[in-house]
Image 1 (spheres, helix red, strand yellow):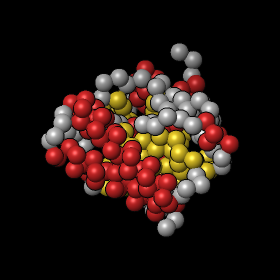
Image 2 (cartoon, rainbow, N blue to C red):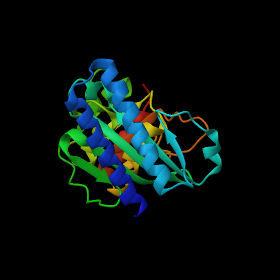
Image 3 (cartoon, rainbow, N blue to C red):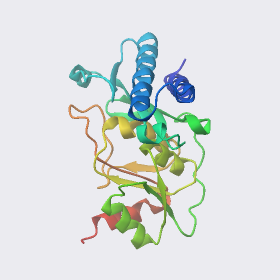
Image 4 (spheres, rainbow, N blue to C red):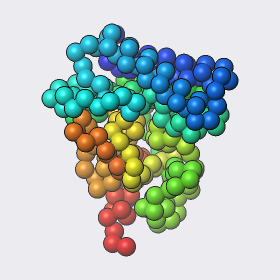
Amino acid sequence: MTDAELARSIAREAGDLLLRIRAAGGSSGTALGDEGDAQANALILRRLAAARPADAILSEESLDDRARCATSRVWIVDPLDGTREYREGRDDWAVHVALAVDGAPAIGAVALPALGRVLTSDAPTVPAPLPPRPRMVVSRSRPPAIATAVAQALGAETIAMGSAGAKAMAVVEGRADIYLHDGGQYEWDNCAPAAVALAYGLHASRIDGSPLVYNRPDPRLPDLLICHPDIATRVLDLIRAPG
């Protein structure tokens, strides 16, 4: 099994587990999110340990072992991206399984379990043409000020959505054109989405245009731009514009 096949298989299996937990109705609210996080994390760690025992792992739901920084291959996972959406019964949540190699987002799988889809870095398609009016996905509750400003400058339609993975995959699938985030993310929030987006020919970078680098001692990676390649320069110019 290749790394990409493994990532896809694990993301799908964890997503199916999360759907079963939610459907069982044994818990709700915060307890449902906690149960889903814990069980999906255990499944992912078990599968990776069995299939790739020499690789390091960085997971949102596990204690960080900084020894990973001395290794070339690090799996970066978020067992349940969008816990709030998951426990509310929504479909805009995801499972992230990524492999960073020498700091680069090399392999990624993002499962959208409630939609029955897994998007991976080994099955890309060419981006659809950019529409006359671009579409930007933003947070349901706290869109960053920079995203609001850029959307207004572009005259973009804004689409409120839940998790980071769901928003990024909306761009990958051509249901949106821009995902711009500033503040509050970690490597597990965006490594798998970035790997998939890059494989699909999209732009993925920090909001200053610099590359996304993973497996750093501090896993905070607070800002991100994933967008259609034909609008990337314009968006980056607006971000840099004074005021």
